Length: 144
Image (tube, rainbow, N blue to C red; front, side, top):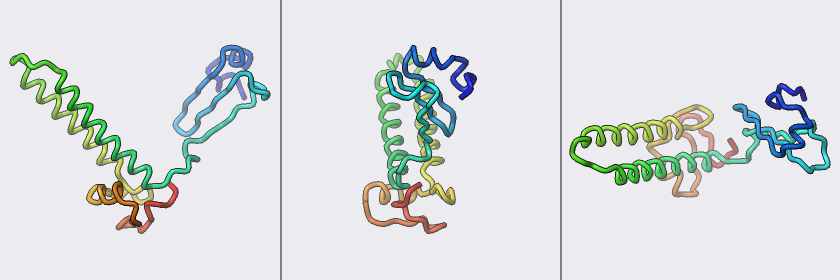
């Protein structure tokens, strides 16, 4: 592997300084020291190779929604209100809530046809019953 892909470091520097994690949108490369393999022999793990079902991915988006809304609430409770900043504080918290909900709305979709599954979000996440996308008919229990 060319040294340019190792962030300009030589393979000896990688072996000497330990774990190196390079990230690109579709590739995660790890070099572990002390392994019987040479530093140039890299273990490559693609992000798309994870064995997640569509339902598990949608549960992650649902978890994101609740965690982000709880964090916005905690931020709002910890921000002191002295009367002068009340309008700004309320506006900033509403903007953060709207951003979290909008990001959830764009993420909670069928990965095949990109149709929004928000009207059925609670049913999909809380039940393990079979559910199929209304548009393309893919089961949410299939692999992504």
